[in-house]
View 1 (tube, rainbow, N blue to C red):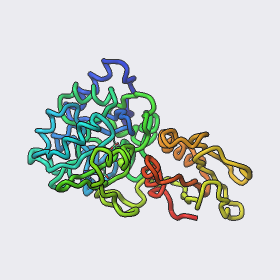
View 2 (view 1 turned 90 degrees about the vertical axis):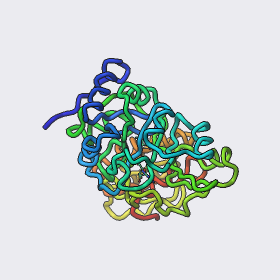
View 3 (view 1 turned 30 degrees about the horizontal axis):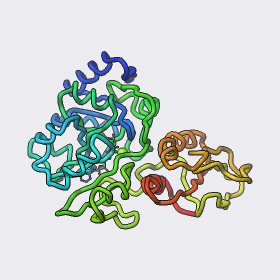
View 4 (view 1 turned 180 degrees about the vertical axis):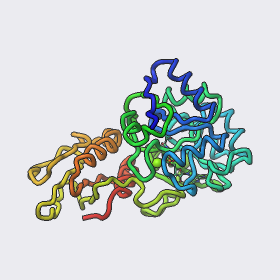
Length: 328
Ligand code: TXA
Ligand code: MG
């Protein structure tokens, strides 16, 4: 079985090789500011099919296409409106994905047959260099097997997809740690399809008040399955930070703590503290790596503290709920 090459993204030769692989229809995992992506030439349907195969991703779940310049929009989207352009001016390059009407030359496999396409211009210098060098738009989902936690470093990609990708560009840990915010524009209002690192408040600042958050935890982006980020170990979300879980007799439990936990820690076999000060950016950055570490211990259950669903907290709780079986 083949094993992916892992090359340092800081070496221009690695980028050149990665771009060559993309152009010739292969798969490259690369860092973005949110999570690592599993990239292929978005205009090559056979290359894109390899993404679905590698991830075991169902074909009804469309991909995000990554671009490095606004000029590439013309290849992919039929048109952009004034609101779309305002969003691009404010948030691109960066962690915002915008859903636009697609052009016919985009293979159907990319968009799962939808008439729309999700596009993002990542800010990460490695992602930008790769797209520019490849000279084609890059379709990329998160570089994890379908339904597992997204990868935030090269080792995570190697662990999950090491035998199914041609090259992994190692650019260190992702600075944001949760996936991009996804929005679609209808008439003059905006719908939030997936909460992410661009917050509702930031969108409202640009848009005025006309931003509709998806009601409650309803899934609006296709493929946003309820247990999308499932860990192998069942996760229970606690009622409040510091709440005492009802641990079953002989249950080996782990705790995912948002901030430094108080007393009574002896009931847990392992504790991961996401941020000693409870800082949401730090929590987001550490979330997936901490979940993966806890998940590797073979415990019976993980208890996760909730955080306030404000700002980045909305995306953090969204991801935790997709891991969780139930709330206690
Ligand atoms: O931060 C990110 O967005 C990362 C990095 C690699 O860019 N990518 C990522 O991709 O999270 P993925 O495939 O794991 O999630 C993409 C989401 C899916 O839930 C999919 O349903 C939604 O984007 N999506 C794609 N095309 C769409 C469309 N035309 N309309 C609505 N949702 C769409
Ligand atoms: Mg994903």
